[in-house]
Length: 96
Image (cartoon, rainbow, N blue to C red; front, side, top):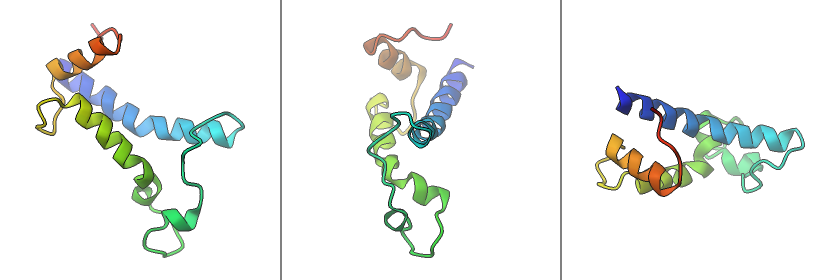
């Protein structure tokens, strides 16, 4: 059950943080100043509209790198032991 909880937290963070950064910048906050704001650069198929995948594509590589750092055995999944090691190294307290 703990593994599912960690997976849910990781998934929520991965999906939420880019939008928080976008909202912060849009409403006058600092936000993520490294985001690409040129729609034509994001619109990979040049159809004049952005899909969700096109919108998030500049950040996918960063998220993959972070996930791969936590996934120390390289199996494409983050186990409880890997998550606990990651949180301990970064000074975070695990959820009880």
